[in-house]
Length: 478
Image (cartoon, rainbow, N blue to C red):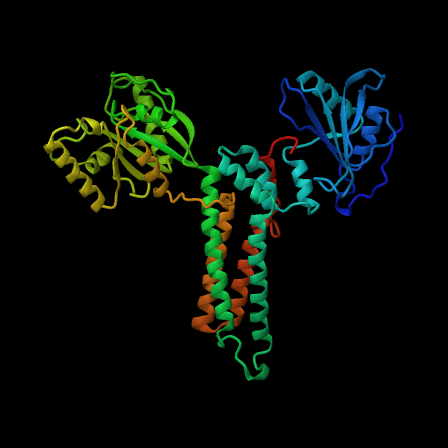
């Protein structure tokens, strides 16, 4: 069959690009499997595949899909999205057949015979970005929505996809552009109407307003980063302190083996849970002690490696035996870890607190807790046996990492945080150059760098290697 051509024109920046194709649904047994095509020949390929001469844009057409010899591969629906009114901005075809590895691969192979090329990871989204159908934040939000580990993270990603985060960044970019115009005018026309634009307070006021707004967006982005990435939490302590029991309590199921035998846990065990909206990547570790057991020693080495990589370290100790008379939990931490970890990443967990029955024990525990607090650390008393204190532990953990996302939080990545921080630093430089030195040219240069850093977030200023890294992390077919 001759390849038909739709009555549409390609955008100049997509001319010459190959038509790409990929399976857009997970491989496996299912009711429907979707293959997506994008490019100047997608429409013609759909006509050749089905024997039809035309498709109405955005209307589903029931068709049979044929091999070159006329054999039926499958039957299903064809959807045509005409350029530029499609996800990628190019002509897009979706073939909706029956789900199944064999049928999907046969259909995809036939599309390749017709001249399509296998799409690389993220190539559909990259073409959408390249054709100005979405910016870089929105493109990243697609992957974040797919990978979301909680309802809050998914909702935040969808808000970013709809353009809320981009709108905040674009408003800041506008403020920076207007600010630069004022400064450039002050430099170019220093004697205009005998007004000193650099010292009349207008530029300083606008600059400080922009600085405040950057800090607000940065605070929102930090919450979004916690929603997206969660935190890596490592449970560490002596053998039989209750680490595995705590993991099971937090996970809500028996994930780790718990026995009275010291050294039961001999390797790291990972579990991901969502508590109070925060994703916790939990790692249970072998009890830290001196041992001649070869296997246990390997487990302890892995535990120490995990400890160095943790965002938050939970030191679990048994209040009935791990802290001897005349010693404290902080001294125990120094013994276990070689040095006392920073208070920002260490939370002390006093397990078996339900067994503190006599007044002297309770008084001693209270004294130790006061000493811990005086040195800037925190301790939470729990009972992994009864579950007492677990809810308080989760609340303290969220507070310690600063997790309190508003309902309208937006998903964010590490690179967004970095760009916002650099922008804030350039604005601080501009403020100093303005208020201390009255150096208009240096103020203008700092504002230019601030604008460029901020523009990296949406992709206004982006290196090709950054784009390749971002889109290369996407799924095939997105």
